[in-house]
Length: 325
Image 1: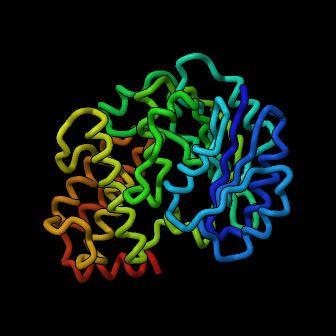
Image 2: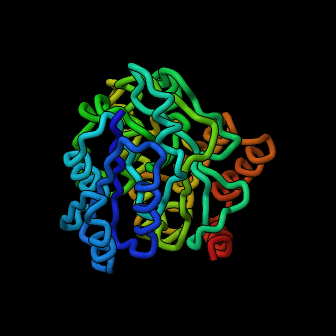
């Protein structure tokens, strides 16, 4: 099958070459490589031009991740599509291995990514999704209906069917400037089955510039994360044909970000009528409903939510300030 590898880049001059090389070095030769530069102001475009004979380049004004993915998909021709973040890179056999899992009716194949630091050094046994999370295969729409989500890889860990993406795209560019992969991976199971490979076929880079993954408490990023969590729940409600009623589902990451935002940044908190007691109960439910958290982790998280929800805010703020600093 013809595969399109679409690399989306914005100011990742330090990593873009490695991403391009990993796409060009795939053992699956029936492929095209498209690089979408989303208005970079560093030397990314000069580096991309060095590969003008081997890749197709799309240069556009900065519009966010969704707009970059839209532009790449529009320029592509593959039966299967892999979106590769410019700070990640693939193992040589990634496309060949994932494509071998393909069959009629599959919306996407997913696999794990080995986490690395900014210099490319592996972060011990740290992968995304973590090993303790079981990757589902089959029609996971029912799992979404019951739990509001399913275990999935980030952008670079998915190979999508063009047929499914034809129904999913375009991604609304204003609403999904960041975390646009969530729009794809949440909608894909409604257009076919999911196949999962329990192995690592790529590398996910964790560095100072992808603050989404750091779990930090910077005001802008913290508010962004809470808003994206809510946005994902609204999308799920729409997919399921339900009215959005917060909280639609419990989610461990959202529970954490919601509580931290309430304690540290109440003036910037996206939910104006929210309170710590409600956030505490939400956190307790998320810990209890987790399928992959150990008993020790559930107890630890539950104690944390009870403490942050019940103690005076000045004390809770002091504890979180010390933790994040």
